[in-house]
Length: 250
Image 1 (cartoon, one colour):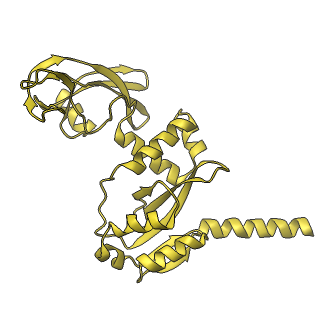
Image 2 (image 1 turned 90 degrees about the vertical axis):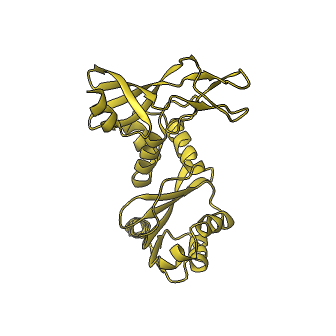
Image 3 (image 1 turned 90 degrees about the horizontal axis):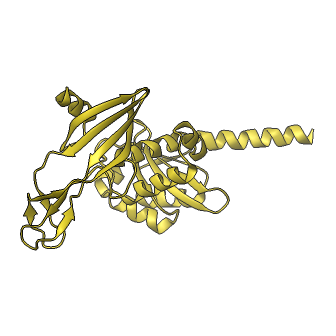
């Protein structure tokens, strides 16, 4: 059973030790498979276990079942400098209450919806969702750009009316998140796209943007072979506004 749960959990290098079911909530006790950890001071490997530290963090749900991980972030004692240290875990930051992939899942929901709706749907506060989006903009996402042909550029407004935006890059064919940029500035977006390399930028055939002029300027510079199209949702919004104003005038 533990082996099956470990496979279902699908977190690299992590094994499930036990489980507990509480109505629609599943709690899995997990631990790193590695018997050693690297000391952050002297960078030497140590297998000398000092003590266990458990914390409860939220992971992506399994269907309708809410999933929490009771994570053992073990503390080791360095065999060289004799000082205790906590192991690093790839799937969750220290003192974080949710896994990195849960933050990515929430961010992808916001891209397809809006911050307020996603917060309500997942029983989170808007500030928690904002924190997850900011976190995802700071880390490198595991993305495959090889087949990217149609790119969408949009933004998430984190604080309404305060001009605080996260720029969102999406593969229009797959709907997958390609990247997040933590400020809506021409120079920053150009630098991010440049990091993809000329080969990837030259293979992009279409870029869909909203009607913000700066995006058009950036795309013309960075993706010279791409056709630029207007995001249909923004066009529809403008049409509705114009029709509504015409109705009011009449």
